Image 1 (cartoon, rainbow, N blue to C red):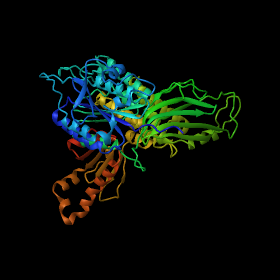
Image 2 (cartoon, rainbow, N blue to C red):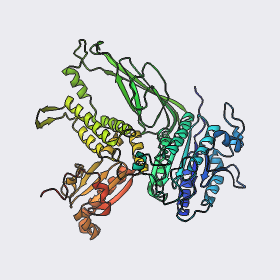
Image 3 (spheres, one colour):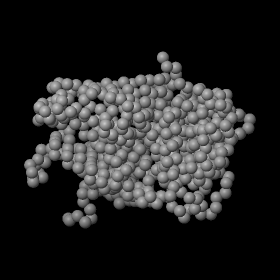
Image 4 (cartoon, one colour):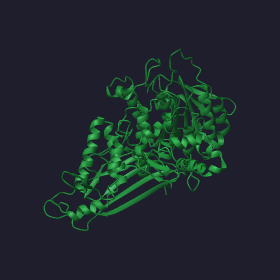
Length: 613
């Protein structure tokens, strides 16, 4: 049996350049969250502002840290030499030397808590109308180097807490003068964003190093301004990390999301896994075209690899450094059977998914899923075409939710490299092709168009995908777009379809609670609507309901039924938010109020103020 790996390392990388109130809130959250990790889990601390500090946590007598310059890249060798970790051998650095910086939490709880409580705002002065000097890239390089020389190929997470954008050194995304704004989508498209490409290249290199060692990078970006998440998105995406984005460290979104990182499973182990390795094996009639998701190609060739590449193709194996119960990866296949080689009726095709990973308990685990599916019936002959029976079999096996999730990921992957207008036309063509093949209709008679029940919702998914923030970036910052797309690529089918087409429930005196159309026609003065977009949960009170609430009718005993009506969507919202990660934004709003935009931006505007009648 393979020996168990050591407990995971949680290396905290803390930004001290933010406001003092923000830093205090962050310290409080970290100290509280550390009580949620297992006692044997190992921890370390790196702080940064103008410079990078690696803290010794072994000594309780005197606080001691090693300072690195923030204006240049730091190699693993430099980290190893400067910290005195000794020559790197087959088993890494000397454990006694490493233990000065990384220790089991049970052994360093007092000293680490004391260091955190004593952290102060970065002392370097900031000029008027200037941003603070912040060396995010150098800090991440030091953290990566520290784990490379002390914990290679063992479970570890780098947890980066950002209070603003990187303004110096590698990974810089904006200048220090506030008159220079953060880049927007138009700047990136026009290639006028000075720092975008160098920063993206730098973070891509760090992501590759972490993937090679099986380490995860989590980013908690909490600031009113953008923090440069767009440039460092590959650090999260390729390592299977988590991304939390909000405006302040005092926000409940950050606090709850950070705690939920350390959620436990039924056996009281952390609900996370490390150093995952997914391999796909197929029978000879079809091959693997590629994968789209939070993973990294291992460039492994085999007879199962197709010539066509879709997503991360040209391989049958991918690395997934971080795994959670909701992690999913989309695998695409190519049918490679030649037309002149008909498949005999009843022939089965096989595919096997082998997932190796390190459980949070340290155990090596292998999960194998093997599927056998029958090929659709063909007419035979030289061209090996599907007949009516074959197409019926394909139609009956269609899963519209899964297909919508696959198409959304494929579209986002293409959107990273192609013009958004072309992406929309591509989606339209794909939908038209599907309807031509599986819909029933008479030419020039729109009323005759029919889709089978297992196809009927798919066009709705494509409609909402076309107008979603995943493809339409107008009104979103690059950081916000990166945030939305990362979760579209990593969540399961249920959550992915919820992102594409949010759910809308109606509460009223006239009918029991139930789903309604995601359309402006569902808004009524005497209704309460509950919208779930995955990222936001919105309770929307109609005009009449809001007025009754303002007048306090729900506080009067004779209107107990009204109080129950108000409480029902609130209770349902709590259920929706209970276990979700990242913790969603909760919005309680009224019709015609300023925050009503959270609902109005998602419903179909079938009628407007310009509509007749």
